[in-house]
Image 1 (tube, rainbow, N blue to C red):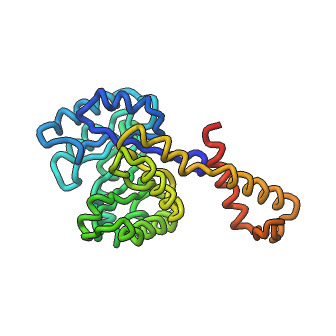
Image 2 (tube, helix red, strand yellow):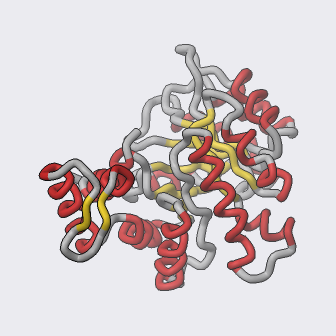
Image 3 (cartoon, rainbow, N blue to C red):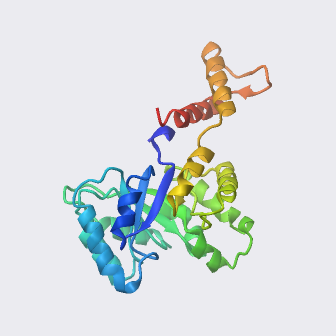
Length: 279
């Protein structure tokens, strides 16, 4: 997919609250992520699965992905068996992936009723998962993306400051690119009231190579989208680059000193694709 067709916003909602899921479907998020794992208490797991299955019995208005339970648990087996055949399921989000075998096992056991492969997304939430980032990212054709689960990773590493996760973030961005996957989305920003902090964090994530972000509240969605869409100045520069490249396809410098070559032109195309994603 081109940059203009990739999601920028992914909204998490608990699977045992159908009324919240219904609101999420009309929130404007590009993808709704129904969580059957951390957001659902143990005694609500079966209800959450049944409610999600009812929703996905028909295609919803926006793509819906489901984060299943821990892959080594009986709950995950039930999640995959119940949800995989349903026509409304657009993807499965796999928690705490630590090896390629985790992805392969799910890919071989989660088959939609019409055949083919369900798109899978691996969450890397431990040091071991990050160390295996590229082998996980290239483990199976059904895998469409990888991302960090930063809350668990922070605890696993004993990291206090936010900057302590930047090496892991860069590792995941590079692994995704090396495996031919889409750029990862940033992990959630846990303070739903701190929109300025969210915007600053998104700006930092964009500089690291992320594209878009998962959210836990609808109020975060416009902040994330604005942070990841090109600014008017970036659009103007991209248009100038493409105009110059059309006039003279060789390497050259723009009047402002910007050097234009094939890599810069490719970046300009990505910028304009993102800028026009809502048109």
